[in-house]
Length: 265
Length: 277
Image 1 (cartoon, each protein chain N blue to C red):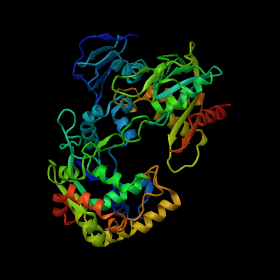
Image 2 (cartoon, chains in turn yellow, red):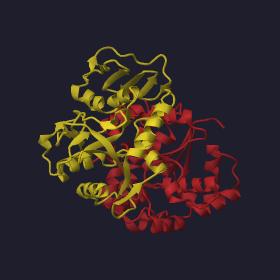
Image 3 (cartoon, each protein chain N blue to C red):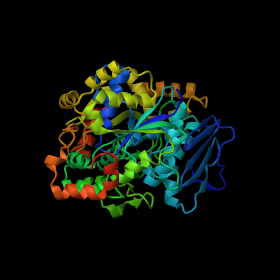
Image 4 (tube, one colour):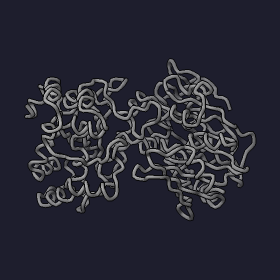
């Protein structure tokens, strides 16, 4: 849904959670990004953005595709994951992990192998019982080293924000939804010599899904705990989960993509 | 004890990790574990993003600096025990004029200072570069840690400035109480130096016997052996090991006289003040 440009308040009067960027009340989430703008997301309403002075359309889109989309999903009872997502043999595979774990790079490598890209940054699992992931914002954001490593031409991507070195690429965008069937949790451990993959099961799987949920600090104060935990438990039973820990140095993106394909084969 | 963050601050390669290890051993009563050191880095992206709800890779380093004091305040408000935070930042104003470290969220800081000639030697080994390169960094007002250029750094950008600017920013200009401890004093009389730092930080009753036990549990030999057997996640890419020498005065063996003279000329005032000249 396109954003509406308009006035957005500085604060939410009835906020139940107040963070440096995100404030949330029942049915509304406000995001304040310095030098970008303020976004007001409300249940059943079009999201409104008030741009900061000098902010470009690209500055706004960078957050609209990510946390703003996640907030909208949370408010309508869907499960927003901080994850990129590709479709492998018609099954959605979410690639989650903390900051700079390499989610987008691995998703891009998989997309270049012909696995359609469903989402980057935020993967929304629909509350439809099947855990459907709709294709959204089908572009993946990459840093210059990853662009080179994947053999892409920097000029083929669009700048994400004028002040950042990252670029967004449309690689094999998916044109149909797929049910979420797997969760890959990427992390780094500088002490390792080579990547290590291990399946997750039972409580570890649910915990991994919970850890991948966007800004889960909002869940309890907004009264969404019962719905969200129900959704988490239900989703966890439907999917395979695998942890992939990569070393800091000398670990090719391609080898991680191969590891993911092997684990899910 | 009042709430608020206690900062473990220093220019890089000045003994910050040692102080964190002693603090860990003192708090737990057991030998320091490298995978569970006290005072997580303020610049770690993962906890920062967890509090923020937006990916820091979508923000410019200046925008992150604008948000950092707010994150400190949230962290301090939610903490049940005194949060200890490690930082290498110089205490400078961010883009809107506000320091990157929130004064209202801070209770105190422990700042470790070390002879800049030894800092340069350690930095050169740490980065796998020449002494000249390291000495230039100590004199560079635009020196930053963890700049994300071609790939995202695991940490957020930290502005160091020159060694002298860094020391002054914490020792003279901080809007909260700062206890400055010399690395060389920690080596010469660890129990007394660390006990004084712990008392200042008001983290609990300080018993010198327990401090001695902690110093032993965080000895250089022990940390070095732990790194050799289990590795250390904070070891830099180009360095063979994090815990290398740790002694005072290594510059006399490893740095040429003209290079040492450059450090002395660039930082004479503060070197005199801390007894290095």
